Image (cartoon, rainbow, N blue to C red):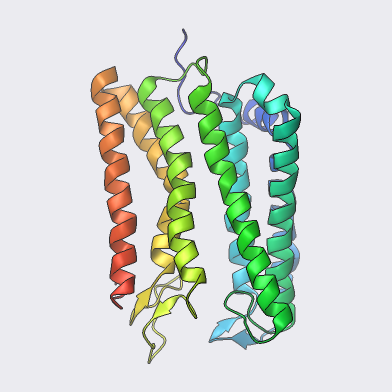
Length: 275
C-alpha cells in the first residue's frame, strides 16, 4: 500500500481541484463565506457603532473567517473518505444540513450586529432566546461534521496514509467535536463567556480574550483547532519516527492537547485569565 503525506499535492491547482471534487459543497460555501467578508469589512469601515466595547462587525468577521477555515479543512480531509462514503445519499444530505446550519449561524450573528445587539447570550426577548437555543443546535450539528469525517476515515482501510498520520487526523477530527461540545456547551449555559467582572476591559490583542478575569473562549478556541494541530504532529511523527514510535507520539500529543484544553477551561472557571 502506498503511503501518502499530509500534503498530497504541491501544485495549488491540483489541490483546488481535489477540494472541488471531494467536497464541492463545503468548498463552495467556504469560498462564498470568504467573499462575503468583503461587505462585512465595508460595514466595519462605514459603521462605527460598538457593542460591549467592541465594534459590532468584528464578531461577524471573526465567524466568517473561522467557519471558512473550518469548511476548507473538512473539504481537505474528505479526500480520505471512500468514494462510496462521499457519494452516498446519507452523506450528501448531512452535508446539506451542515451547510444550512453554517449559513443560519452567519445570518443570525450578522443580523444581530446590524441591529446593534448581541447574538450569543441574548435572552432579552422570547424571540432572541429561541434563536439562541436553535443556533446552539446548529452549532452542534456543524461541529459534528468533523467527527463524522473522522469516523469515515478511520473505517477506510485504503487511505494510503501512514498509521501515525491517519491516527492523528482521526483523533484531531474527533477531539474537535468532543472538546468543543464540552467547552461551548458549558459556556452556552452561562450568562456570558467571562468568569468574573472585568474592570478596565484589558484584552489579548487580536483574540479579544480578557486579561483580567477568566475567559471561557480560550478553551473553546483550542478545542476547535484540534483538527489542525494534531494532524501536524502526526505528519511530523510519520516523517521522523518509526510506525510504533510515531503512533505513540500521536497518542501522547492527543493526551497533552486534551489536558491543555481542560487546563485552560479550569483556569477560566477559576476566574483566572490566560495572560
